[in-house]
Image (cartoon, rainbow, N blue to C red; front, top):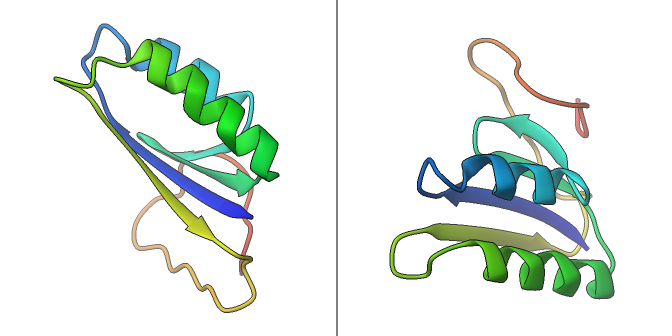
Length: 87
């Protein structure tokens, strides 16, 4: 499955969330990561982040796509982050 992760967390937890998420996904922009995961690695990532965040204060969104076949991404402005996945 292809996963896009978007987070908005307290500044005290930003580095820990980013470091954890980067072990699984590619950083593409501030607070945004994406990449291909298996169901098991997705669950592992989700469980790790659940232990880090404060659910009363933080937010982590997962957009789960079957694949990238019907997906398109367009960029306006400067490129940040990791590798391109769609041209």
